[in-house]
Length: 105
Image 1: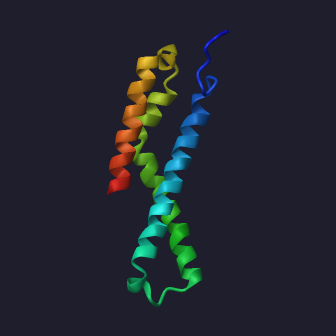
Image 2 (image 1 turned 30 degrees about the vertical axis):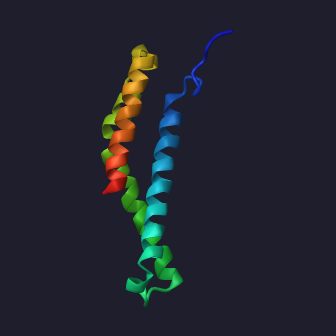
């Protein structure tokens, strides 16, 4: 039995899914910020809140792409060594460290 990686060799789809998860986490953090600080947004109605979420997602997409440029670059280089286990571990650490810092900010 051959030991296949969990992503079946499709690094691009895994990269996209990871970035999508980060986008969801950024959106959830924005919603939690609103929930914990509703007293500061007393005159905000639901349609304005949806506008804030929409424009926030647009901002988050650009911020996520900028923060994750090293990770994206390391995933799109067309060499066979990117399937190496050590390379994937280093790439995963880069992803987690960059996005942890970005989410914390």
